[in-house]
Amino acid sequence: MTELTLEQKQHAYDELREIKANLAARGWFPATSGNLSVRVGEFTPDKFTFAVTSSGKDKSLQSPEDFLLVNEKGTPVEATRLKPSAETLIHCEIYKYTGAGAILHVHTMFNNLASELYGEEGFIPVEGIEIIKALNIWEEDATIRIPVLPNYADIPKIAELVQGAIVPRIPGIVLRKHGIYAWGASVAEAKRHLEAFEFMFEYVYRWHLLKK
Ligand SMILES: CSCCC(=O)C(=O)COP(=O)(O)O
Ligand SMILES: [Zn+2]
Image: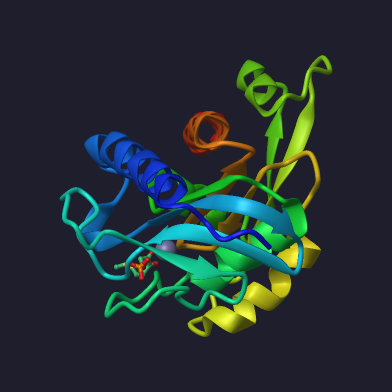
């Protein structure tokens, strides 16, 4: 596998910096929550590298210590005192089984509420709303099911469930009462998917209240 260049690393960090600021401006990283990653260089399911946010940082602030490079096991590939996100193993599994280019994880009020509303079912159903097309699903009145996994304290235990939870046409997985992982081929696509999911969660929750 070819060595990464400094330019590739800087480009990935620049992309993460930009999307981090964008999502922070929406208040989508309350209380240091959330993590982001971008894959860099060549990919096989068993060997890849990605840039990920360092753990525990206030994601609404910028610092020279915001990102680091890790391998497919979530281990830093360069000497650093930075710690990768505590949830890096979930990113590893998503990359391995989807070949995605970027993953965005946020905790929002509406993804938490929707995840609890449908937590027992194991998926959040979304029926016939136009924004489903943002996931590149074009059928009329499409109904989709966004997978929800239990929010175990032990991250490796969650990571084990990721492969089985991935639904090929749905680029996201929700952790119950925790947050969403949304992915895409690029940061721009992952952002579009994330925005669509968050719209759906708000719709699902508000519609649930209106129906009562
Ligand atoms: C304060 S939120 C608890 C951890 C979490 O769910 C999260 O997304 C942030 O963890 P990280 O290690 O990536 O900062
Ligand atoms: Zn989280």
